[in-house]
Amino acid sequence: MDIQERSEILRQHENYCYRISFYLVQDEQLSIQATIAALLDLAVDSHFLKGDLVTQKEIAKRAAIHSSLRAKATACSEAVS
Image (cartoon, rainbow, N blue to C red; front, side):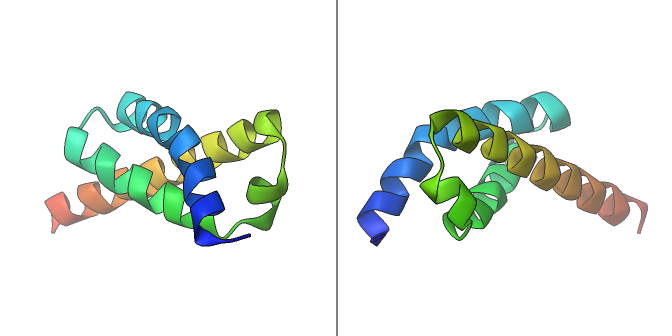
């Protein structure tokens, strides 16, 4: 799969990942960071890239949740330091 195909698939899920991230962290900058991290993870996930739309959406949701929680945890630990 070439870079053009990967970016096309990722674009289809970009807004979905951002909406999940923003819902979880309630901060625009953290949501953007989490979305970027999720999309980078998805870009190298062969199950995501080769899956059908339903499978891609499920995997994208998990990636967005994981990256959002990681971004929120990092932000909280930096605030405490």
